[in-house]
Image (tube, rainbow, N blue to C red):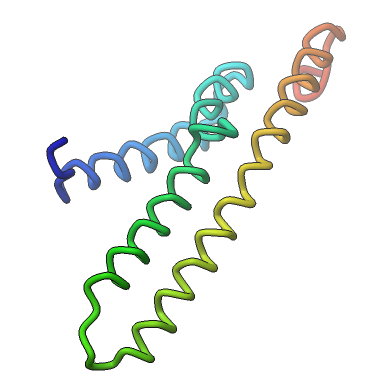
Length: 117
């Protein structure tokens, strides 16, 4: 597999910034939820992938550390791993998305709900 490039990752973050701007324009909730769904999937969403990325970075740093600053590098590796666990915990956002989807379906079935009043 070819190595990702900084340009490819910048494109990714630009796409997320575009999504944020779009959501600030108050789109239809069903469309907004559909756009967010792949990002929060409990198995393949951003929290899971980002946590794995942080763990991989920690492993790479640890395997390539030199004798200089070993204690400091070890501390930084531990912090990366802690951050990875915190990101992994964010996979629960998937369940928030499920609840939001259910609430939206309920609101759609009620006449003149929410901001439509």
